[in-house]
Length: 237
Image (cartoon, rainbow, N blue to C red; front, side):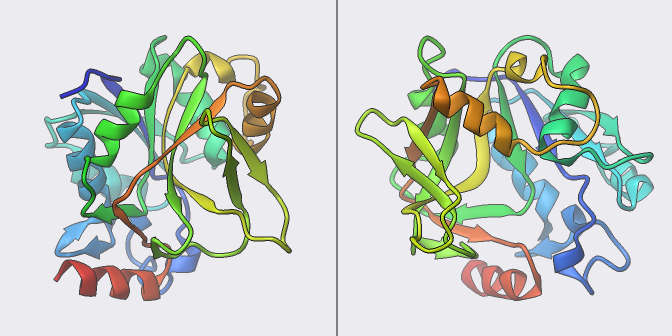
């Protein structure tokens, strides 16, 4: 196995509004797909990729999340408590920096699954990571190679792997970010504390030529709503 980050940030604090009514009595991370909660799919993938410690942020049904994760040993779990305020994608990682350490980290969303592929996607991500030229490396999937790629926004990639984020609603971008990435934590240390999106950080890094991507050939399942959960259940059955 290719060496890579030993620490990961798992973004699990969202309200899961698009997943209602399934999130009326549980956090989105505990919605089951293929007989297993989303959070466990992600943690199992990270463990397989050699991650030893995961910082998991919690907000919606936080007590339920902590109870579910209490006995998890592989990876080791550290809770980042966002009960008082949701901090969004960038702010959530920024808030968790003390538990993440100074080395490059994996970042994972809890609503992305995949199946198939000639190379395990996280191994592909680790193999492509080059800290000499990159500050962030996103795992991408081509448009049409999955379920749940909503809307036209996404990424363009040049021959070197450098990315440009598209905010064009008229011309669909060819690649989607599936929510897994390797990044240097220091790209967030200059950001103010509190809630903020990771998207402006993408823009800063692409302007510096430090934002890269790698394209997996696995089939992506974005489990963002009940229809996505039903489709993923059918694929995994």
